[in-house]
Length: 448
Image (cartoon, rainbow, N blue to C red):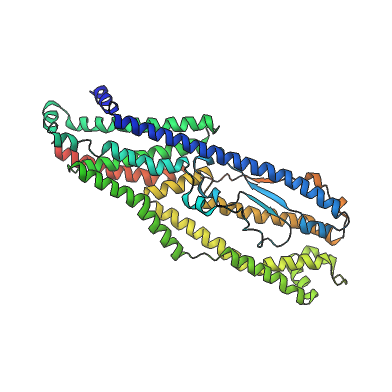
């Protein structure tokens, strides 16, 4: 019976076209992912070559004045891109994965990013997460909306009910056939991803695959419940498509609107302007007052005293530091609001499977907001490390040759934080159990 149901399902030309379309769009998403990885690798390689040439050229032009040299020289930090990131690009297409900074004021440099085509940003990338979250449910709906109602409308369901000793088992077999076909398509695409994109079979990949499997199971559970209502095919189709629109479009838009209004984020521009104003104002202020504030921030440098010259690099970099210090309040507020927005979105998403999936896939792939926040924090630590390394040599007026410039290569930030399997799977498991139990109760009542 099971083989016959399987054969009948696959004999439909519509099913074959649907499966072929899913596989083709899956392959397109892998190509998009591969292009993304190639672009990221190209950017890192170009940055490494640029930094080496940039330092060499500036050392040649400014061999004696280290303070002037370090006014220009940029050092780069790379947010490493995991191979699995190609399956869920997330915020990596709008937030920079490379930060290149001088030792001057950080807040004026932190939000620099590559210019992007706004039309491309609006459309987004057709990565695998898009195919999974948006397209797979549509085909599940197409495969299941008339799974029983069509038999009722053609008059063959009563015959099947009379001939079958286990009508509920028959219903389960019909759903299982469709479920296995869709799951096979899912794992075929993921298998192709591991070979084409060279994604390692590590914890991230298996968690990504497991959550994807649960998302497919959720939509089958929802379809199972709708089918148990014993309505017409048109009613089932409208109900399931309405659920798709609600979960995929309406609720995510409502959540985003709520987060924007509930957690207004200060513009990064405000922080940058505050830093620049804080720095520029110091040109007209007493030098001693500026240096005193600098020594309050860095008491270990007090031994350098108060230079007498009209212009000196200690005073200049003290001004830069004061700009950052005066923008620290705005910078902290921006960081905290983004973190609050991220936590709130995660909590709300626990009740919306589609939003939960997008957030969790991004978290697993290392392309979500939390990854970007950790990268920004690491940029701050990286910048501070550079300052503490170079300040003594600048204040001593050491020549450029005092530094081993060949050692200054681009540095990498590896984000080892990842969402737990429980937090990623539990909301989906709860939703699956809810609709499965509701459907089971109604079907048992119907066939008893």
